[in-house]
Length: 316
Image: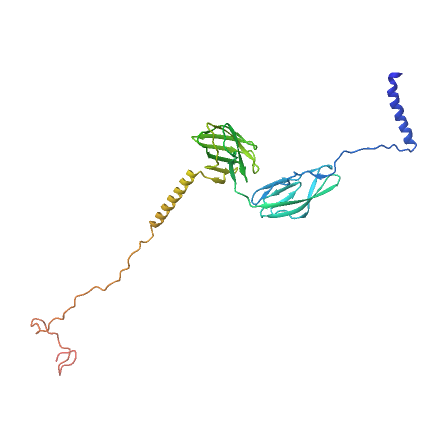
C-alpha cells in the first residue's frame, strides 16, 4: 500500500475540502503581487530638444502598473505646432519659448500618475559637419570621428578636408547611425560621402577616419567644406572650400557683368540723341518785274464797259 499513499492523501484532502464547503466553512488563502506602482520611466535628461521648423517626435515611457497605458494633457500648454496622441508627442514647433505642461497617464486598472514637463523651443542652429580633432600633435596612426550638428532632415552628407602634408587616410567606417560610406583622397584633399539609414541625432558620430602620419603633425579643421541633403536631394546646408568659393564668386561676377551688358544693348531700347532745333528754310526774294510799254503783239482784252447807244449783250 505504500506506493499508493500519496494518491490516498490527495484524495483525502479533496474529500475534506468538500465536506468543509458543505458545512458552510470558507477556505481562504493569501495571494501576493510583485507589480510595481505606475510611474514615468523617461530618460533622466528629459525629452529631446526642440527647434523651430524641425520635425519633432518623442514617446512618453510609462512603466509599472498594468498596461496598456493611455495619456492625456492634464494642464499647461504644449509648444505651438506639437500634439499629444496616445503616448506620442510630435509635430513641428513653430515658435520659440519655454512651455510647461502636465501629462497624466492611466493604466488598465485605472491607476493614474501625473508628471510636469518643461520644454524650451530654440531657433535651429546652423547645420555643420566637422572632424573632432585631438589637442596637440599626433605622432602615429589616429582615429578621427566626424560629427554632425543640427541635422534637420539630412539623409546624405559630404565632407571635404585638405589634410596637412604627411597625413593620409588608410580607411574609414560609417558612424553610429550606420548607412553607407565612400571616401577618396586626391593629393591632400580628402572627400567623404555618407548616406544615413535614418536622420542622425545632433552630435552623432557619422564617420570614423583612420589617419596615418609620416611625421608629427597638428591637425586643423581648415580648410574644410561640407554639404548636406535631404531624402529628395534638396540642399539643406553647405560650406564651400576656399578655392570653390572663389570660383563661384568669379562666375557670379561674370554673369552679372554679362547681364548688365545684355540689358544695355537690348533691341528696342532707343539710343540717346541730341535734340535738333528745327529751322525755316531760307528762300530767295522775288523781285517784281519791271514796268514797261505793253507788247503790241499781245491782244487787248475787250472792255467790259458797254459803249453808249449799244444795248447790253447786243450789236447795234
